[in-house]
Image (cartoon, rainbow, N blue to C red; front, side):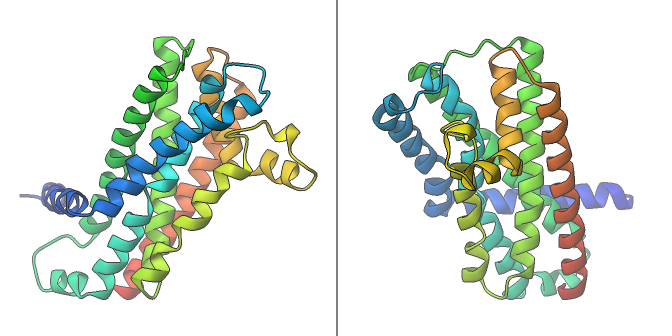
Length: 253
C-alpha cells in the first residue's frame, strides 16, 4: 500500500470514528438539526409577516437558514478537534503507523457531510413551509457548489480555532460569533433596512455575499458580482483556516 492509499484508508477509519461520536452526541444533533428547524419555524411562521422583503418570506429566508445551519453545526467539530489534541489521542497516533493528517481530513469530511445532511433536511422542510425556488438544474448545482465551499471554509476555520484553543470549553465558544453573524447579514431582513453601522457591517461581511449568491441562484437570477465575491470570501477563509490549522497541528501534535 502506497502513502496515498494508506492516508485514504486512515482517513476513512477516522471518519467512521467521527460519525460514531456524532451519533453518541445529542448536543451535536440538536445544534446541527433541531435548532435550525426551530429557528426556521420562528422566522417563517412567527416573525415572517412582520418583514417586508418584497417576495415570499420562505423564499427569502431559506438561503439564510442554509448558512445558519452550517454555523449552528460547527461547535462539535471544534470541541472534538480540541479533545483529540488535549486528551492524548494525537500523541498515541505518533507511535502507530497512522497518518496524523488523516485526523484533520476526517474532521473536515465529517463536518461537510453532517452539514449537507442537515441542509437537505432544512430545504425539505422549507418546501413544506412554502419555499418555491425557480432554479434550473444547473443553478441547483451552483447552489450545492457554493454551499459546499462555504462549509469547507467555515470547517477549516473551526478546526483551526479548535486546535488553537487551550480547552474544550474555549473551543466550544468559537461557535457563538459564527451563530450570531447570520443575524448581522441579509439572512432574514435586507441589509438596507438596518440602522447605520449595522447596515454597513451587513453589506460587507462575508455571509451576506454567500447568502445573496445562494438566494440569486435559487430565484433563477444569480448575480455575477455576488458570486465572485462569495467565492473569493470562501477561498480566502478556507486558505487561512487550512494554513492556520496545519501550522498549529504541526506545533502541538
